[in-house]
Length: 111
Image 1: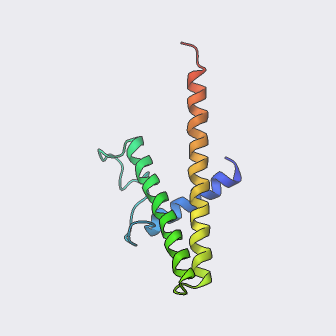
Image 2: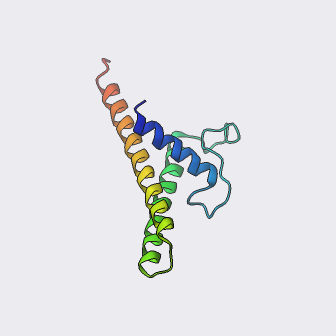
């Protein structure tokens, strides 16, 4: 795995453990043993939860930036929120690239 994808995946897993985008509540990793066997553990459900978290991280970065523009947030908070959003975007792009690569590989298989 390339270093950017590895770092992004690690950051995403850390965000999931912290409950990013869920109001601060604890949320287990979608691939952990605690969630194994649930009916909503399909690939689309896991991917949907990941995308919801990615959007929530981006929205939080926007809110923090707006709060800083209004003088209600510290620069450190803005940098942290924007870095989290950037790492999340890198993770989304890495997953997209892997999905496209897998699709191309499947389509090139002989029948």
